[in-house]
Length: 491
Image 1 (cartoon, helix red, strand yellow):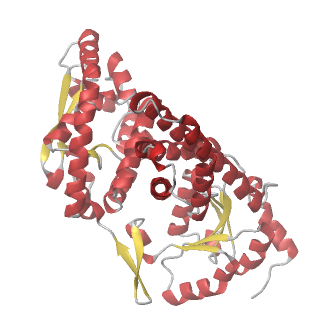
Image 2: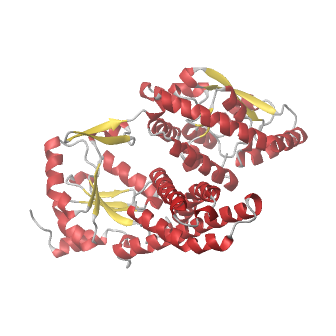
Image 3: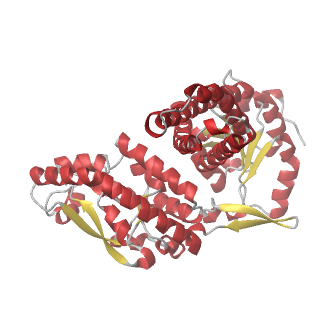
């Protein structure tokens, strides 16, 4: 193996963004990120404990001895941090938000289960209310992930956030990996350089330098102190891929391999062991009967609660629509549901009368709007919106009547997008899986990108949701939906 000369290596390093060569070492980056997450966890856990104790004291049991509870809070918080550490939640780089939420829920449940057990064993067990611990557990599951999400949103775009990653392979798969990591910097994996043997691929991919050949990897990792790599060469022969892995894996403590099935959007693939033989398991989580039953129960409970809580809003919005413009209060539109069955979605009217007839004329007269609709299948600043309609769209209040679609069984609270009938021609056969489940009032693409994703990317996200579904994922999306609505990111 030929090692590049110092001059060659200097030229290579000169094309790497300076932000990737920050004065912060990898250890300092991890340490500082860990401190931020520990601070967030301590704050949110303290709030959950304090809130549950206060609620129990003033509304449940007035004879609760507050000093007994507050004296154990430091011990409880210490246990949480130790458990989170062993669950690899510090520094938290490279963990996607869904997995983080699942791991946090497991960690929080473990600690509170331990506390509940201890109340049976210690002498003062009668002095501790198990309801208090149960309430604190529920609050913590909600606010601890939100706290960590806030940390990622605040610091995810900082140059010092995350750890550097080498991408081995700059073809279609490698380029997609680079694009994805740049699009989601909060994950904490920063692609700073790609390496490829193909000289035609040298240059830049999404502002990331592509250099070569692969023989420079050893010296490159030493100079940049990189211990994380992603091998994205799924289309090379198995023998060549095995040789590359064998030769270069020893230079990295963390190595991720993009499988040959990359072209099929297999982000939902998990591994399975067959007596020492590695298998790749493609999940169809939401197509299972058990999952459908769980989801229906979830929908009925939460849709009923949300309808009751929304009654005052229904009245206020109905009056505002009537005062603002002529026309009906509600708007009905045909959408495609389970098994391609058509149904009428219910919304508050946000557009002027005869809006659908005006639509094609507007697109014809405005090339920019036509181009926008062709990509996103919606208009961010639709000229047909009424004054109150703009407000309702901004905060997604026009979708409140869809809770009745959920009760009726046409929709689910969380699910794929409810596609319009005219959009069916955009689907290929392999995307039919989207119509094997009920569409949702909210969904994964709504809480991650909203208007910023293309129609094709939304379909991929919907397929990912169906294959990777879990109750953890639904609770995460529900919590994120509340945040998105409050921030006014609708439209």
